[in-house]
Length: 432
Image 1 (spheres, one colour):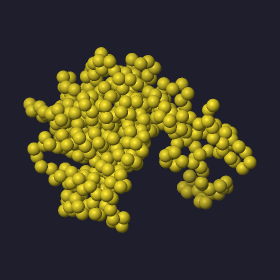
Image 2: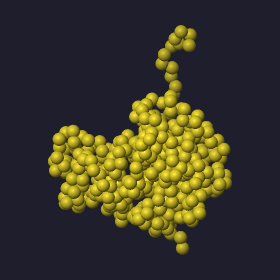
Image 3: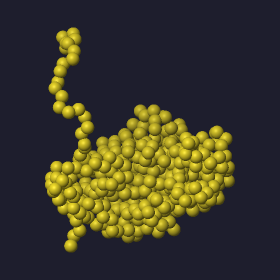
Image 4: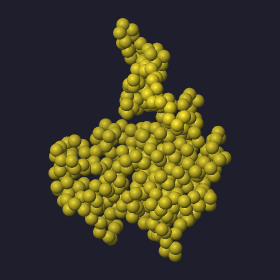
């Protein structure tokens, strides 16, 4: 027998059904609440509100669990392949060898930008924020690929998804090159996804950037671990825009804008900026730890703890190992990375942090890794967007394929003035 909850409103009793998810999560179904009672719920940040049913990503923050389509995130670490994970998220299962080869071929075919789109970069200031460039250019793809504005069959959807996933790295690399006054480096069709991105970022004419296996695997892991994370701000934005039947390009461009917010995609930027301030201020890591534990001190230690994961962030554990491998190969000193490693060591040995489960999170390690690769801080959130794009596409598709889906239209509790009569306060001016 289906479980229900009873809502008491004065003397009136209203029964509401309970929805149970695959992993035992339970939610009160309030679909007909306003119809039955005239009431709505009030949940300002939607922290207690499920806006959809989804089969893409499962998180258990109490136990430190993250799964993509049921597969634990740890199982993608031995031979990390971002393209394979992208297919899994978007199409709901792991691809066969032929399907992966075919999809990789689509990425290669679509890695170049239309020349007209490339020319638009000439009208963008060289110091423009990379996220502004990314959101604008993804939206502009709608102008050059209008045949994909309506995706009603699986073949055209796969083509559109491949265009987005492939071109996003080309756009990102081009925005970086332009900001540095460097010549454009075109994608190399013989290179894999992550290696090709680094090639477009850092190669020079007649001097190919050499991508080591440690760096390539680490970037694959960064992209994989950011590929989806339930109904976060940017993903919810993609669903909100997509619910109006906005096209895939526009919906993902909106996701970039949401991710740009410093409270969402800028967390690893905050980590590096903190390390820079520590270095410039001459603070020792020991002093930073002391100040972080002082409630009356304004100093904040970024990159520790997580809103969702109350125990440990499973993504952080994976990136910590990648971080150790990459940093061991570096032959150049970096004071910021040295500070970060010392902060990590001190925090993990301090009862204050251990008892409160304030472990280094994914942003702490991703910031360290991206810096070790030579990627500048203002490109960190762009790299986040590259990784998150398959998740956005998967969420858009899931919503688009749901026959019961409706345009999202939240309610509000009005707290403005009561009924007020209009009164003209001024006289006519200049006959207007």
